[in-house]
Image 1 (tube, rainbow, N blue to C red):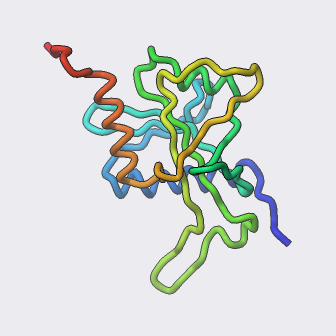
Image 2: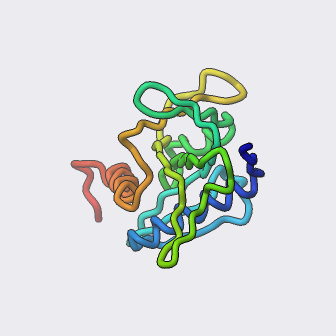
Length: 167
């Protein structure tokens, strides 16, 4: 029988997963103690920042081409705000239904049995409902150290659009 994880366990494995990726990619990690701005962590690279809201599920909603996650509209609105100083992203970590399978110990390694996906919400349209809005997390956007680099590429383009002169 699968053991359902508590919300704090899901939050902690999500943080660990992103910490590993950010460390591998050489990004600076800032964890927030309070999630009042819809942000669990901020990643930095040479002055650029990306904000990430972390979610974790043991029972993902599979849709054609990836996954869908219902994010509360208040958080969605905070992450999509075009006036943010850092681009807002949703990261969804998918873990096995049984918490006992999340981590496998080997003599020379520890293996996390999970995978993640991400979506940029910066500048997204208004939610169609008042409670939650479905966020598409395409399977071609796995959460990896390399894809975190893509988040920074997006932030760079938004802060310095083509044709805009920088003084």
